[in-house]
Amino acid sequence: MSANPSGHPETFEMEQQNFSPGWIEIDLRQYRRNLEAIWSAKEPATGIAIVVKDDAYGHGAVELGRIASERGAEFLVVASLAEAEKLQAARLSSKILILGERHPEEISPCVQAGFSFTSGSMESLREIESRARALGQKARVHLKIDSGMSRYGVRWSEAAAIASELKQLPSIIPEGILSHFAMSDELDKSFALLQLSRFEEALANLRQNGIEPKHIHICNSGGLLDLPQAHCNLVRVGILGLGVYPSKVCRRLDGIAPIMSVKARISAIKKLEPGDCVGYGMRFTAPKPMRIATLGIGYGWGYPRVRNKGAVLVGGQRCPIIGGVSMDAITVDITDVPTAKTWDEVVLLGTQASQEITIHEIAELKGSVSYDAMVSWRDRLPRVYRQ
Ligand SMILES: Cc1ncc(COP(=O)(O)O)c(C=O)c1O
Image (tube, rainbow, N blue to C red; front, top):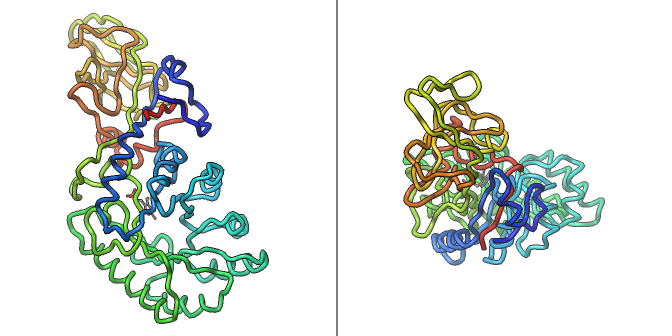
């Protein structure tokens, strides 16, 4: 194991990490296996853009970006200029693509740094043209088409008008055209297929105007898995690289497994008499003599703030959480694990012996989706990378 080289604020060497009440482990070997599975799920000529926004969904953008870029990722994809600059400082070989819309004041830094970035309106394209021209440089733009998600992009039906305008903007290199699926990972693909046909219509309009973008992309992980006809010549993959499927129903690939575990240690063990209460608000009362363990992490570390819900793995067994999760404490019933002792390792996310707690389980406790659960872990948890 080695410490995170990216300067993650709470990262320590392994020896020090051992004393933290909790930590995150990222399995880089499994990450490489996941990338192999992803690479084999597409035609050889199709490029891969690896989405590493929000610090690679909480896994470490530089650490994963380095491996993805060594594997041949065409782009590393982020959501802000700051994220792009952090990746650029790591000097990785993949190009960097920034999603969303850039504030006018961010355009010159993007152009000067050579970042590719998305734009989805005539207004923003004109702003990019004027800023790039003032610099005497070219802007690498991926034109975002709104094919039905209604967040960003030029409405597909207006692509022809944009295309004829784009020809008048010589400081813009129309490097790519993209859209984004709203429901690629569900069983009913009818809306995804409608989005694809709208996207193809917009692309045809660009081509009729003599614009041939090098990179054509609409697929996320769900699209990579279930919509091979939509791969175009580039796919953008985020969650699948982390070993997590975007939904229960999408196609499974051999070799994919989660790379993130969250662990803690037992900080204290207590015996309860029948009638004893546990935690704030006295939400748990012992019905019988019990043995409980207290972990030194809680919602202040990113665990969902649940009461008498959820479980952790101790000694290879699922142990229920009792009482309410506090900022810095989680109490767990270990009556059935008599061998458990203080400073034993506990798994909050991941596997121990034959048991597993998935990110979907944590997401359910949060009343949310796995993407949200993954990015909710706080920087207080040191991140340790297994090579
Ligand atoms: C525009 C865009 N493309 C691709 C992705 C990656 O999606 P996934 O993590 O489902 O592969 C995202 C993620 O939110 C996104 O916003």
